[in-house]
Length: 484
Image (cartoon, rainbow, N blue to C red; front, side):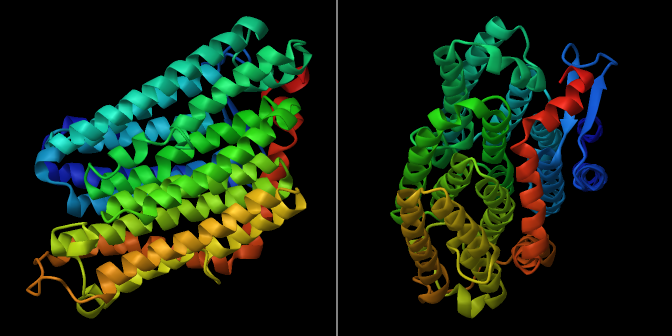
């Protein structure tokens, strides 16, 4: 509805406030859903009155509700950022319309209860994100968008092929029905092949090794707020799809997929952080860090234990806020100095101490320094990894943490600590624009601290969600009722 309203008015000012209002309503709705579901319930909606497995089913369990809630929080904060940073021309070209179509795709993917509609929602968010990247028409945007859409279309083709195989062998694409029927399908090789194809398809969407090249090639090209929104949500939909399918549809094949996922997790961490270490463009550096952090998320999934999944869910919430906060701080530095090149930045600690704090808090959290949420998330992953005997991947994760700290220190030294290479007055930006960026950045930075302060309650919630995921019978019973 917000997308339709934004489309009906061509004037920038109403579009801005419609964007904030629509995002606030999304957050309110997601909060109500989370309050109903997160005590441990599962809500099921049969669209059009057609019961599962025949109709379109929407399912909200603990993981879905938490992800939709995080989507609502990010939507509201990024809409406030958009109000002060998106140009009237982009607004007239339909920025907020695309913004809400993207959010519809993201939330649809989190809530859908069948594999085909998951594919449809992936396509919705792919189309919206592609147009958001090219909106503005600069050469770098077109170049990044082509790489982005090419790899993601390849993932969509593989996804659709896997869905076709599963439908051909079981006669259903409803996730609960698939989970119920697939264990009785005797051809384990074909089942594992379909699972492997889904792993590749969702791996492309999530940005895992070696399928992540589209991400650092495209995320630095659109406006800063679009990059921050993408960093918080898009790859996380791929991670969500991996968690959902691997725990619900393929629990019998965990022994087959576990070594694959552990290797993928370790290589994703290493290649992502090594890519970040050599970068001097701030946005490209942070984009490589998205890849590295995805490796930690896959690591927890690969353990297939309550502790590992709980750690992944906690780390997922942490990294969504921390990465978006870093991109917001980077945007403010760019507005002040007109560049994201670290070699041309410098002196921001002296001239803009508030910006330095805005960057330092999420940077320390992302690097895993105590007592921030990143430290607690990595500690939980390490403990789960040691309990699961994944000693090599644990060692890799600790080494990558040191390199992450090094790259964060590099940004700090280049942008904030060293003297500015070309002394002179900074660009003047209006108080309206400065607060429009600083407010969402400050909220996101504080979010990491609140998550750490409420660590006991947060981990209890994540553990309850993980235990729900590891018991597919609960999901099947909620969706199919007496058929389970």
